[in-house]
Image (cartoon, rainbow, N blue to C red; front, side, top):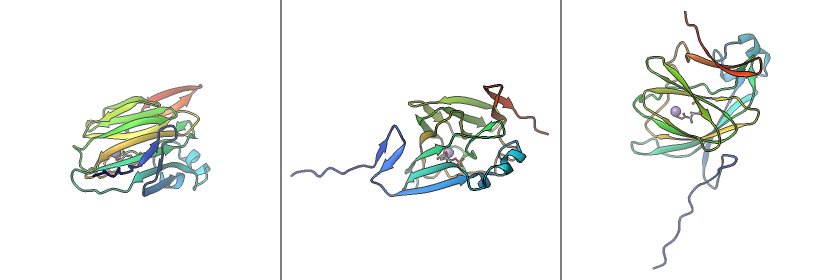
Length: 187
Ligand code: F6R
Ligand code: MN
């Protein structure tokens, strides 16, 4: 018997583009990110429909034991002196982790545990990021080209965008030509 070879989905590593597979796509614009950036006046000054990031995901099942696979394409840019970034989230099922892989561009992955302790990992082509459970995560583009990162996460993880009412404990800004992580003073 001659076996048939199934053609799997394909990812172009250099661009993060998927081919030959049904995708779910979502764009997030400036108007979708109120209260995310520190400088509200600079946020208002940008076109509301300017795309900050797009996520392309393989259409898969949210069932126990399944995985989602998606690529985030985060545009370069700043709101005031703060670099473009994703909204960021904990997983609804807090114990569920995720793995990110840097594909193109340069940036940072901001990780924060439930005690509010934050750390930054450098993202670059080939970087591998193990995000443990109970850890909020956000991508930040500190470069001048698109930052693309592949992510694989459990179908049951879900997203909890409301769990960080005071936001993340670090903001990444450019000051005097330098990329800086600044602690946020809350209250
Ligand atoms: C999935 C995941 C990524 C993000 C994407 C957009 O669990 O971490 O696919 O969903 O980078 O970021 P958010 O979801 O924070 O808008
Ligand atoms: Mn996630």
